[in-house]
Length: 139
Image (cartoon, rainbow, N blue to C red):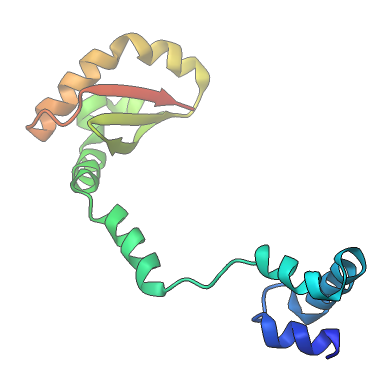
């Protein structure tokens, strides 16, 4: 069997096209031999996955209750932190009651670090629950 027919029969077309796969097969055939080249390509090729599994993982991340709270917090962010700081930092994620704020400049990390407890209390006051127990700052 010719290398080209092995490649097209064994592997679905990918982003790099048939020529790249042929070139890779020839190189591996020289290195490992004809038999092992096909196995080496198969071992380093991503296996197909069901789209149901992929969508379930994505939807699981989206439907977390923290995401709804984060959307609400973003809409009321200026009232939480004030208009001055609202331009330079924003809530990025809320996971396991830890609110992560993205700060545009590292100098603001020094400015906001002592105020994290006040910001946490204000977030809990605006949201109406004890959803935030800790605030982390990142650039």
